[in-house]
Length: 258
Ligand SMILES: Nc1ncnc2c1ncn2[C@@H]1O[C@H](COP(=O)(O)OP(=O)(O)OP(=O)(O)O)[C@@H](O)[C@H]1O
Ligand SMILES: [Mg+2]
Image (cartoon, rainbow, N blue to C red; front, side, top):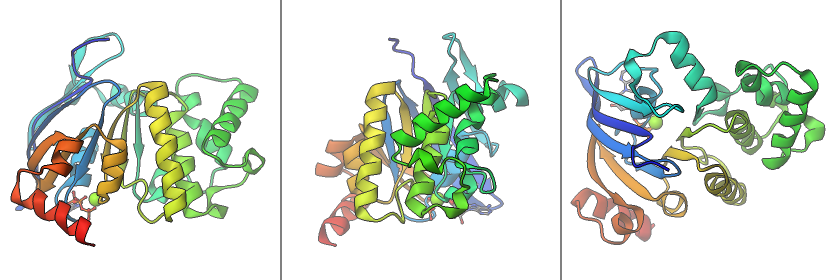
């Protein structure tokens, strides 16, 4: 265990032309910690995740990451190959739209096993065995391992994304609305699964959600965003039970009233 944060974000800022995507966002994330990012549509949540994943380049600010060897690196200074390796092995990114996060014409087993090949596993039987194990863990019948996600339901696709991302036991997972569009029972099981994995693997997660109940269930800390800025941040129970910012008060009360 270490006190050095896994992820350390400082002053992250990005504009799309004159429009603000993300303005001066800073936070630390430790091993095994779950941070929920909430805020209205267009508040910059996806922009933030894409900046963290190095898919977008910030206008200002930086993202530092504690590598497995303990060294802290500014992610912008890693070359492309090193960034890609990180993305495939130590990080996961679960997209809001599963069709963006899966290879739709590749079998479920291929989707789940791909990252194992990226870290050098070559034995077909082992990869298939591990993929099959993970399908079972996310409650997809391993008998469907050779089907493509095209024949899967929305909930199954989300669960396949989770298997695909977690099979290499990443240290950090970014999740963009992983449960939106799922019916309540599927959503509850998925959240249970994720919660179990956080405990079991010591995963750190940044999860974007519209749903304050999801934030309550899963996260230790919360960050409320509006127009690209962080309005409020704190322990989840404190933010939800005793919100300080008027905007957060509105957010919490409108959900309770609904
Ligand atoms: N590719 C883009 N080009 C121009 N502007 C963009 C682009 N992507 C996002 N924006 C703008 O940046 C701001 C933040 O968008 P972002 O997608 O990060 O919001 P969000 O919080 O993820 O919203 P939602 O909850 O609807 O997914 C918005 O004003 C949006 O219009
Ligand atoms: Mg978004």
